Amino acid sequence: MNQELLKQAVTDSGACYAVFWAFDEAKGVLRAVQHYNPPERIAEVKAKLGTDEVFATEAYKFEIPPGKGAVGRVYASKQAESFEDVTTLPADTFMRAEVAAKYGIKSIAMKAAYGGVLEIGNTNVWSSFDWVNSEN
Image (cartoon, rainbow, N blue to C red; front, side):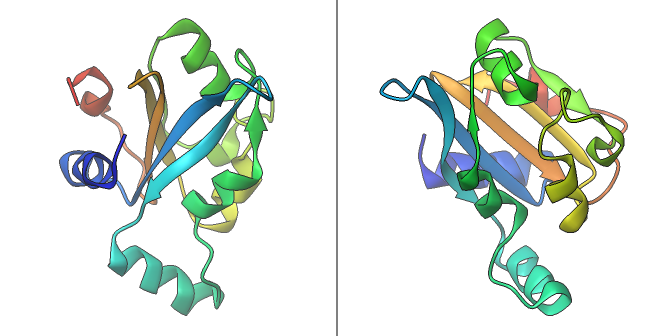
């Protein structure tokens, strides 16, 4: 996975971020290894929260076992998942719901890709998740 593919996923889907999760064989967990945020999203968060952190960079703080939480389920099952509003979900369904709420993230979609999990999301509520069925 490279930066251009993450940027393309954001552009194609209308998302405000993308994160790629890869399996860390040494620890037996999924970890965020790359992300992309459009510059305007970074500026928006900095103006609102006064921080250089964004939802995508917060992902690096998590280690997710295969089969646990949304990222772990997608990795284990190879089945895409999407959520209209993750801030309303219990932690066993989406363990980063509180972090999503902090940054105003509502809708998230993820799918197995490139041996890991590609996740995108947005501050708007999505009612359609065509991206999860696309080839990218």
